[in-house]
Structure formats: C-alpha cells, structure tokens
Length: 148
Image (tube, rainbow, N blue to C red; front, side, top):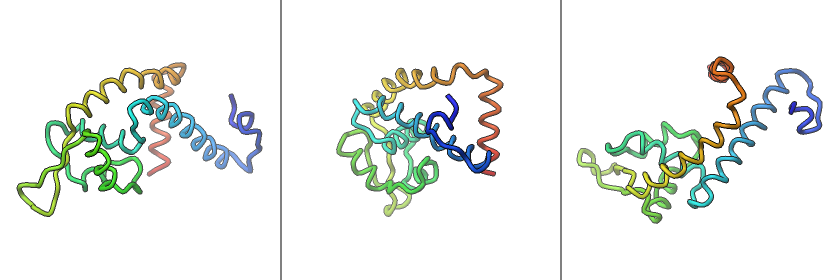
C-alpha cells in the first residue's frame, strides 16, 4: 500500500514523502521484531547486544565495542548489560589487560535464545521476499547513500 494511503496524508515533496516512508517502514519492521522477541523478554536493544556478542563469540567484547556497533547509538550499554547479567544472557569479567575495563561474553542461554529467534526472524524476511534480489540490493545501496 502506498504511504499516502497508509497514513492518509499528503506530502510537501518527494523527499518528505521518502523520509516519512522510511520511518513508517522502520516502525512496521520493528513491530514485527518486537513480537518475535517478546516471548524471550528481550528489548530490541538487548537483542542487538546479543547479536553483536554472538558475532564476536567466543571472543569477549568491551562496552566500547558494543557502543560502537549498536544500531541505537543512544543506548546506555552498561545498564543494558546489567539487565542481561540478571537474565544470565551474558557474563562480565575483568579484563586481563586493563582492570578498569570489563569484558562481556554471551552465555549458552543467550546463544540458545538467538537460535530460536533466528527461526522466527525468517518470517520478517518473508515480508520482503516479493522484492527481487536486484531490488533489495538497490534498496540497500540507496539507504547507504542517504547516510553518506
């Protein structure tokens, strides 16, 4: 459905329309993800941290590395990690090289959660399968270009 029909609004120009369309689509896809991670009692930020840690596994990660790779750069990673410690999704260790720094590592429980979520995440991918590979590649290129 076209964005103007979806939100029943007109736009000043195509740039504004594109901006609103990107926000609307982001929210649509985010809602889909939230439904998938809800049974695991994860926030989108915690889910993002788990994915970063899985990519680093079995190596540990620093808070700085997590901040650098987060999708939401405004997150308070220290508090997020604290909540994840309580849920036993991560472990925090003292860094051997710098005692002021803490090393964070995903636990087996965190890996298990991600494996289960991966199966459901394919449902979100299905919502984009009507786009050809060429169209998805072009979309990725255009979105990257916006941020350049």
